[in-house]
Length: 131
Image (tube, rainbow, N blue to C red):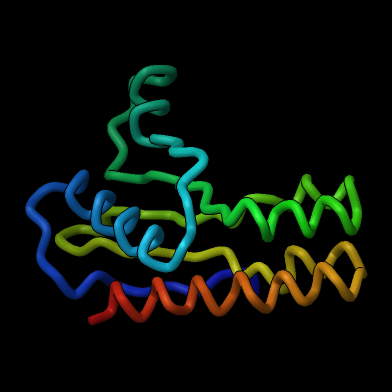
């Protein structure tokens, strides 16, 4: 499996509020957001398609990213960890990229250790959001 998800238990009347909550929980687990791709906005602007809320957040811990790049400079292509926030009817789902299979493609023990640490942080975010 390459991802795991959680449904937000809190009720959000505004999708942007849900995104803000996810960002808050990422930061609480020491994960910064280095990118924020508004897929819904892009589809509307480029194709005039109305699409439910869908954002891809690039989550990163710079010291962990540095360790990956130091271990294998090309493994930077596997960064950052992506987190999807998407609207599904009246609920909001958050899907996390599982860093283990993704970073495992580097076949490097030092990078595998980083993947384990990143996974623990993402699991912490999932726990915060589930509460």
